[in-house]
Length: 201
Image 1 (cartoon, helix red, strand yellow):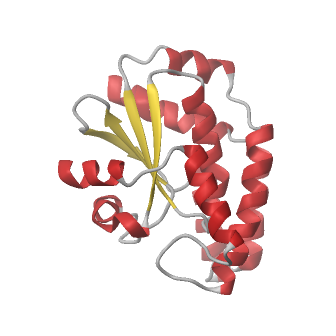
Image 2 (tube, rainbow, N blue to C red):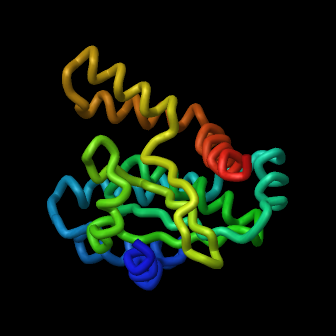
């Protein structure tokens, strides 16, 4: 596991470099990941717009800021993501904003398809759902906890929709984006903080 983590960290990007990578690929008519399609490119373009907006509008709450600044030691937040993923577009900018308010957290983003060995350790119901935040002790690189791929409210919305309609279709994705819009990143902040607090308790 430790070698898999080290390899993923070597392959990882800063948030700025991740954004640049996604943008450059879109300019070439491509998406991140090992599969290419018109749909994935379309989602990547849509997510680019979302992330630009979120970077400008998301604010870390004072409570979260204070608690992050007072963490007991240094951590690495290693996030598995892809540019075409709608949830990642809503969540990764919030994670970035949180990491920016404290010197106790270093954010690294690794592409899911390029780091399959790591992804296999963090499957959700047997699937490679992303984004996935892996909390590492910065000194030992030990996995302390993990979070993702969605905040509880968003996860419940999709479960309820699937129970009612049998599928997760385009209207479901629209409802999900509305949920993120109304939530303003608050659930993500609180749940990631909660993960840290559970580690300390």
